[in-house]
Image (cartoon, rainbow, N blue to C red; front, side, top):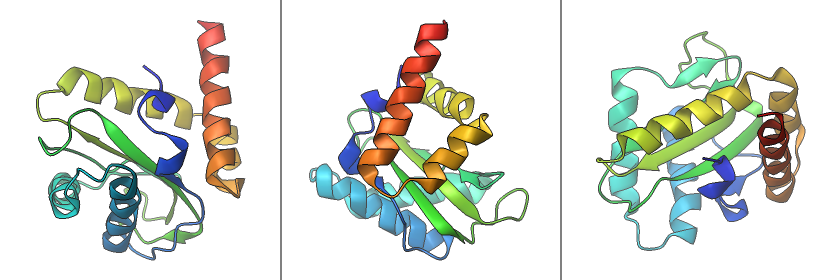
Length: 157
């Protein structure tokens, strides 16, 4: 599984405007429903917020991976966003978030959902990758960075 299998360039937003977690969830869901118009915005926000209420998905080092499950989506989908200013996220390390991977999956898709989260975690271990994402100025550039990194990792397998 590749991130580029379920996140397209039009589901990426460089230079997020949000200042806090609630604004971020709304901004990122808005990006998603612009491209997947069949999805209900409020249902998706509820799924992300419900998961977030259990424990922060701000994993530290400027990274957050908010995710949720809902039957309002047919397949795994997601949004990627970056913020140079940083977002107040209540992260585990107390620091602002700069790179966000948001995932939504159908309730019955435990395996693919976990694989997608693992894939993101593998990519984000590399601080150089994180920095390239954070420095990117456009959705196209972010998509290309991810595409190239996935191709590099695949060639090493």
